[in-house]
Amino acid sequence: MTTTDADYGSRYAASVMNTFGPPKLVLVRGEGAHVWDVDGREYVDLLGGIAVNALGHGHPALVEAVTTQLGTLGHISNFFTSRPQVELAERLLELLGGQPGDGKVFFTNSGTEANEAAFKLTRRTGRTEIVVAEGSFHGRTMGSLALTSKEAYRTPFEPLPGDVTFVPYGDADALAAAVTDRTAAVLLEPIQGEAGVVVPPEGYLAAARAVADEHGALLWLDEVQSGMGRTGRWFAHDPAVRPDIVTVAKGLGGGFPIGACIGLGDAGTLLEPGNHGTTFGGNPVACAAALAVIRTIEEEGLLEHATVLGQKLRDGLAADPRVAEVRGEGLFVGLDLVADVSAEVAAAALRAGFIVNNATPRRIRLAPPLVLSQDDASAFLAAWPGILDEAMPDASGEQA
Ligand SMILES: *Cc1c(COP(=O)(O)O)cnc(C)c1O
Image (cartoon, rainbow, N blue to C red; front, side, top):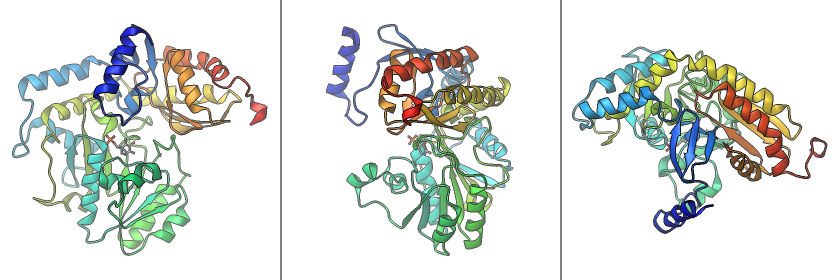
C-alpha cells in the first residue's frame, strides 16, 4: 500500500464500523468493466460489485436516466406514484411472463428488504412455516437472516424468527419430506450465489413447484443475485416453472439501490393496505435506473453476450488441472479449486489486476458486468495459470 492508500485505510478503520474487515482497495473511478484505485492502478472488475453493476461502471444510459430523473422528480412519498414506478412494475411482470393484473410488485431498496417483504407476505397465508435450503443466503436483516443457513451469521443474533426448516439444496426427496400442509412457502435460490454459484440438478425447481402445489404452499424464488440477465436469461429459473414470489435486487438498478418483491397470481394481493411500507422503496430515480438497465440489456444484446462470454470463461478456467469443477450459467461463474486456497487466489488475482471473489475457502465466484469485453475475458484467462502458480506454488493437478 502506498501512502495515500494506507491513509484512507487507516481513516476507514478509525471511522467506519468493522463489519466487512479491512477494505482491499480504495477505489476512485470506474468505466465499463474497469476500475481504478487511489494510486491510479487499473483493475478488471470480474465481480461487478457482487453481481450488481450489470452495465459496468459509468454507463451513459444509466447516468443519463438517473440524472434526468433526479432533475425532474427525485423523491415523493408512497402517498403518490410516478411514471417510472408504474412502468417498472409492468416491465418486471412482463419479463416474468405475467401481465399487469396477473401479479403485483412491492419495491424496496435492497435484496434483504425484498425478502423481508416476501417473508411478511407469506405470513398472510395464515401459515408460518418456511422450508429453505442449506447453503442459502437471503440477507442480513433479522427476517432474512432467519432464512439464511450460515451458522456464523445466525448464532450471534438468536433468537431469530422461527418455524424455519432447512433441507439439503438440490435434493428433491428431502424437500418433499419436509413440506407439509403447515408450510407457508418453499424458498430457494435457483442458483445459490453466496455458496459459490451452486447449480441444482435438472428438474429440482419443477419438483419444488409440484411439492408446494401438493400442500398448498407458495413457491418463492430468490433471484436477488441470479436474476436480471446474470445467467444470460432474465431469470435463472426455467420459465416453465411458475413461482408465486420472485425477489430481485442486486443487478436490477445496475448500481443504483433498488429491490423488488414480485407476487405472481394470487400472491400479488396477499399484502393489503397497512401491512407493509417503505419510505424510499419505489422512488422515481431508482425506478428510472432499473428501466434504463432493462432497456440497455435489450438494446445491447447483453443476454446473448453473457451466454457466449460466460461459456468462454468457464471453458478457459476449467482447462487448468488445479480447477476441480466449474459451474454456472451466463456471466454467473463459480469454480472449485483442488485445495482451500481461494483467499490466496483472490489476492494473487488482485495483484495481477483482476477482481474476483473467494466465496468459500475452496470456491471462486465471478459475476462480472454483462458488458465485459472479449478482450478482458481473454486477458483474465491468459493470466489465470500464473495466478494459480502464485497462489499455490506446490500444487499440481495430480495432488487433487
Ligand atoms: C445479496 C443477496 C441478498 C441480500 O441482498 P442485499 O441487497 O445485500 O440486502 C439476498 N438474497 C440473495 C440470493 C443474495 O445474493
